[in-house]
Length: 564
Image (cartoon, rainbow, N blue to C red; front, top):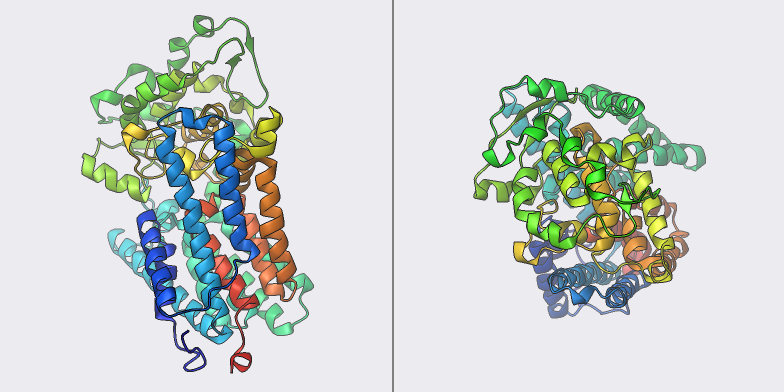
């Protein structure tokens, strides 16, 4: 076992490299980080402990998913087996990352974990600021947040501040929000301010709102005057800096609100017709630009008795499905090219231009970092072909609430559809998850072998349609508040009530029980639970790793006096 009593404030570099590796966006890097650090822990003879409840959650949820996939006969489709194996590997990496963090922190001190977290967030801040400098130069030495070139800068600037994670900027923002809360409670205001500043650079409205709410609660409930003062200063910094840093982001909120209120699906489309746009022949189809999708898919062409199901967002003929997996597979290649056409959309919602198709190498690279926007017209065409219902006829057209609420209701409707769905869900990757989206082969969650492309009927019926519908709208609608991405949707839809109970008993209850010793653990847990509603965070293996690191350092790490 390593001697942690000496040089307790030195950085644990092997552990830091593990944290940097396991939170990096590429799954192959995560796997490598887990394998190498596990070997290091064994080599150094760290005392291996019985897994805590947090780690048991990952094993139980994996078991539930396997049983659910079997009960739902998912293995009868040969295409599913590769994706299923990938899903199993996701949960195994989650377990190992959590367990290795638990073992390491339990053998260390609070002081050493503090130094490690300072170093981690310092490195991330340096990478984020260097990215900002590059953007500043590329914008012609204008402030990129204030410079609107029709797409790349302005409101989109924060999307490039990805930090050491190289994932989307929301990951960087969420992790820095958690870091700001940690340092605030440890009375390290300079570090809290640094994390808060990096979070603001990412211009994630939801993250700013979530952290602001937690800070307000601290101001109202915390008795420690130093912490209350720091919370007040951090809140003021956020409220003053954010509007100055990114005024267009506030305009973005206003634009989305006005669109939802008017429900004007055609805002900006007239401008497109006046532009001289160069696109590939495969996507140059008349009904994309003249909006003749309705005439291409007339209701009486495909329907007998049509019934509108409240949480089926399309018109569904109950005598036979209006979509077919075989048809989806047959059209993957045809529509993939159209879906990956890049549309640059400014804050006013008008389509500025459509770029020519990139070369395969360039496109693959863009897919991997997920910076490619979707051509709304191609998505509309795909919706019409796959569901035999034009996008304009969707039940979602008149829905005036955030799409996230609609997808949550879809999940509840799905659970009530049968006892097996209620108890065990649809199975791994079969309803709502990063894996389910990835397995479609459309490149929306990185690359995936085309010959292994798979889509579940349950995913097609519910969240895949909602996802595609909102991606068929203007870029201002591509918000986390509209997309189905949510850990709660994933746990309920793919693992059922059993999966939700496993999460509540093994994860939430354990955190509440252990976190009662320190308010910091509870506040960071509340922040995590808020974030879980916005993304598939367990699969991303980033925010949850940092949360468990902070939580474990509060609960399981010893103070220097205890260690000696």
